[in-house]
Length: 135
Image (cartoon, rainbow, N blue to C red; front, top):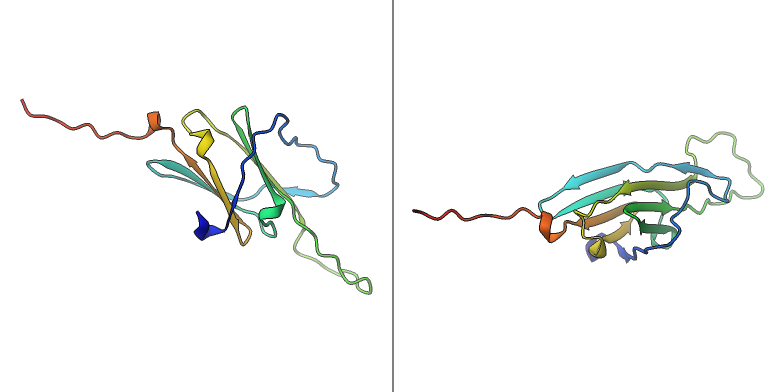
């Protein structure tokens, strides 16, 4: 996993992140690609401006929650924004994870604002090849 960025820790918390926050900022839903392979499911989420120190991933009661915060760069005190097309805010998205996923082996990395989660399938759900014997 080192090739995609710094490894992240997935924590199991008693109280998952709730929809309400104490910060008065925009919260965006990150665009996410989901790729299924024979042995895993991969989630790739775009979170521009988020790095490994500002992303929190929790797993509780089958709900995987990704939360990324962006440190807004302060404008120089002598300037004011006349027009801005890009909004700054945090990112939050949740997914239900079934028992088909080996929840103890989930891996996460982030690089250049792209969060990548690998959710390995449990052994019992992986496809198995059955050999056919003659007569």
